[in-house]
Image (cartoon, one colour):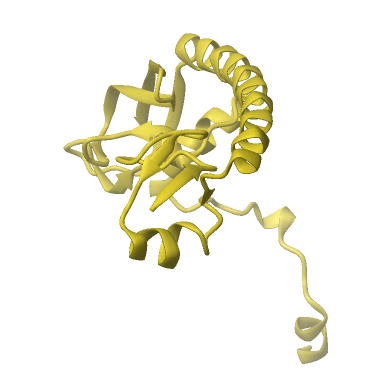
Length: 171
């Protein structure tokens, strides 16, 4: 079956490519999911117009991602986490925590962009790779520091204690 792809499909092709696939794959998956259309002259002309529009959007999106990547490469972030005396973290620091730290610096990322071989489990400085686009990958520093405040309970001064209405009724 000869089809024109409407979306990029890994291992098959990119938008606008004409591909030959097995009938079952085309009829049962690609066509119903809206990933491809039959290769007719009318569809080819329509896909070419759509492809030009998508390429223009992709170029604009690529420029925005390059700007964000440049900011992320210049920025280093600090994550405060609770740790033991031998610098092992209680839990770990993963992509979500790193994205939240960048968001605090006004750099919007997606957790899928953060490339970690394994979660961070110790205090220290780490170089984290960020893949914004298949062609855009940068490295940024992530500092994981000890949370000294989390180990001791906060003391409430006696003057700050407020009586609740239930306590007043008990008197």
